[in-house]
Length: 202
Image 1 (tube, helix red, strand yellow):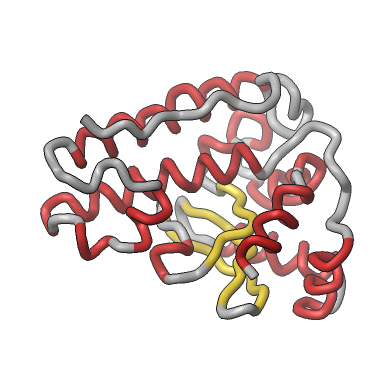
Image 2 (tube, one colour):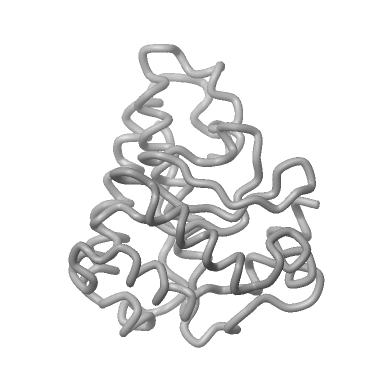
């Protein structure tokens, strides 16, 4: 039986208020994320690839039987995306990156503010459901977006920071104003973990 599971949050459900309300955190973590994991485990049942780390599984989708592949993309992607998302946030985190990551963001985008504008634009511009990402692509920092629950590892690229622009991520607080959510979200980004991911990916 496949054993993917949803980790507990590293902070309380109300820790990200007012950026993200407590009810959204409960629904998003306990219901939406859990459903992806349940569906992923069901899709992999009886296959001998169920014990791989999720990133490895999604980086090698050719090994998944064709009739199961889309379910693994949707639900495995949903699992990895949300795992990265919860870890990417923290109450009272640093307001911007420091050190080498900060320098590289300035180099790649012109300034931290220009990076934020580019990232928000990707999130706003993602039609329907999906994600906005800061990724490392062949040593280069880029801002991208993916539809649905696709993850950058499926394209051989390393995700450093991702924001969920599915409506369930923000609707209770921001209604249909996705740009307001994207702007507010910077207040809870955990730049320490983003810097760690960057150092590892390099």
